[in-house]
Each structure stands twice: as structure tokens, then as C-alpha cells.
Image (spheres, one colour):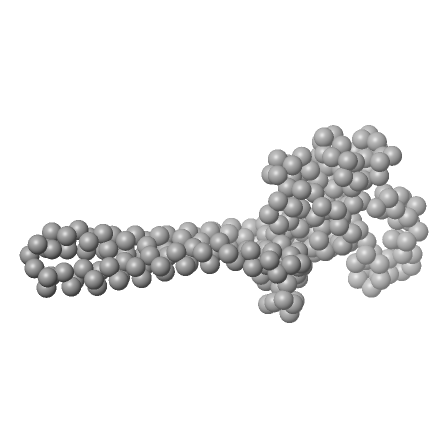
Length: 268
């Protein structure tokens, strides 16, 4: 799904909120050991993969992530994808832990080893500041991902019903549908009731002149109800369309700018 992530989020690897900002946004930090859920968020939860101790070891990188030989660093290098994924994952912590307060939160949530000091962490993570997107996996060209969008596009892009199922009970699944169904039901009921009243009011004309004054009132209320319900429906549809269109325009603009900058850099 990585080549299509530009559809779902900002084309910016720095689009990652530090841990203290996650708290400000009232997001609960959920530990996950699944790399594909790293920095995926839904409502008031964000999934973060802890930083393994071995990735902080230079000896581990030299022994397992550096492949000696003539193909080292080339596309034929069998470890090139692994190195890019590990480098991209490490670089996300450059944005997650920007301040000492973020470091304390990370230790409280067991995201980094507890015996690591703030000074050592800064010294280690500062080496990733100059890492370019070309040195990391395509997934890490982006920052946080919204799970609702991943699940929406999953049937079209990866031929799966969902990217990750977070609701294990039927009640949770149908509970998400209750609010929109209730809104549609109330809107349709209002429209049908207004139509029914409007048809009933027309029958008052045959009942004599004493109902003419009431006829005008009832007919006016029915028409206002019909027009009001229609305007509300159109307003919600227009607002949703504007939000989707605005996001697509912003995403396409960022993608075009990114491609233009890449071409200019290659020419230089």
C-alpha cells in the first residue's frame, strides 16, 4: 500500500506529532509490535512500536544490517530493503521524541529502554537528522496514517476487507453506524411528515372558509419544513464534498511540489 499512501495523508515524513502533542490531542498511546501499525491512529488512539534495544546498537548494525561485498549499497544488495526499513523506523523517533518531556513519556510507555539517558538518546538520534527520504522505505516518506482511511482504501488497493480490524464485537461495528442511520431516519421522517401534512392541508379548502386561515399557516409550516430539511441535507453533502476536495487538492499539490523538487535536485 506504500505507493498509494499519498492519497491518504500528507506527503511529508515529518508529519508526526511528538508524544506530548499526542497527549494534548487526547490520544492514548497504544504499544504495538506490528510494524505496519506504527504511527497509525484512530479517534483517540495512536499505535506506536517500541524502539528495540538492538536497533540502538552499532554492533548490531555492523553485524546484521551491513552486508559486505561488491553489491553493498546497490539494488542487488539483499539487505538494502531491511536497512531502509530500519532507518526509516528509527527516524520516526526523531519526530516522536523532540523534547525531554517526550523522552519521559516514552520511558513511561516503555517505548525506549529505561536505562537510556536523555543525553545518550539525543546523541544517538541526532545522527538521523540528515537522513534523506531516499535512504528509507517508501512507507516512511509519510508520517502518521489514519486507520479509517486505510480501511476504506484496503479493498481497492490490497484486496482485503480492511487494513486492520480494531472492533472485535458486532456491537462496536454497528455502533459506528447508529449515528448516521439515526440522522438519515430523522431526515426522511421529517420530509415524509411534511409531505403528509401538506397533502392533508390541501383538503381543508373543501371544508369551508373557516379553515382558510389555518390552511395558510399549515401550508407555510409544511413548506418551511420541507425546504429546511432539504437545505440541511444539501449543506452536509456540500460540506463533506468540500472537505474531501480540499484534502485531494492539498495532497496533489504537495505531490507535484515534491516531484518538482526531486527533478530539480537531480539536475543539480
